Image (tube, rainbow, N blue to C red; front, side):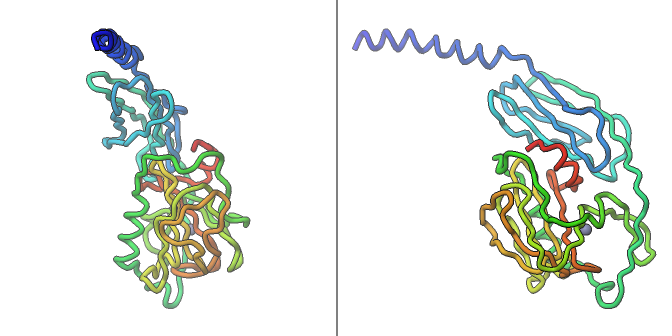
Amino acid sequence: MKRFTFLFALLLPLSLFDMSAMAGDGALRLRVKETERTQGEFFIVEAEGAQSEPTLFFMERKWQMFPEKEGRWTAMVPVENLSAPGSYAFLLKDRERERRQKVTIKASSLPVQHITLRGTKAGLRATETEKTRVRVALRTITPEKLNSGPLILPCNAEISSIFGRKRSYNGGAATSYHKGVDFGAPSGTPVLAPASGTVILAGTVEEGFVVHGNTVILDHGHALTSVYLHLNAITVREGDPVQRGEEIGRVGHTGISTAPHLHWGTYLYGISVNPLFLLKENSL
Ligand SMILES: [Zn+2]
């Protein structure tokens, strides 16, 4: 008994010493992968040497960071497509320590797209059901990473409309922009999950998705979600886990849509980012 007490007394201070040495040793580091990004893209931010969960601020907002291996924390911070170009700074805080990194946001100059909607579809307004359910789903923040490895395209077809173009409907003012990429494909073309994740929304026209049409939203973790609109059929259910490459639905013409196509949108913290930039960055 005496021997055990002695041993315990010896080990306890040693282990405490080790722990404090590990936590206090590392200098706090803030890294931003590329410090110049265009509207609709995102910054890849990494923190090291934090003693507790670090706090990241950018454009007057706090961004949740996610723990990775060996004490690293990461976040993909979106640059909203309508944010003003110019100089900004990231601020990382860990207790009383602070680190800053200046970054630049460049303008994406794309021509305005004029869209004419005819007949009954011109008068369609999104219902409260679809607006609320879509908004809530796209803002999902899951601290776990649900995908690893490169993304794939969700549809094997030509891109008919790119991300970010400002839009005018029936001659009105261009105050909105295209929050995704469109693939022009025949009705019934399979739609595949471009990354693994969980189905967090499967909504139908009958349930009130009159503008979005039949809709699927996937959660990929680390504040990344993706949306698929105008589907002919939905082949998954809410709560289902999906693997990259798995079919989630079929291309259609439901909701506000001038021809059969897939609209694919990707969101970070509920903010629309260019899906093709995400594909190119391969940073999941
Ligand atoms: Zn679209």
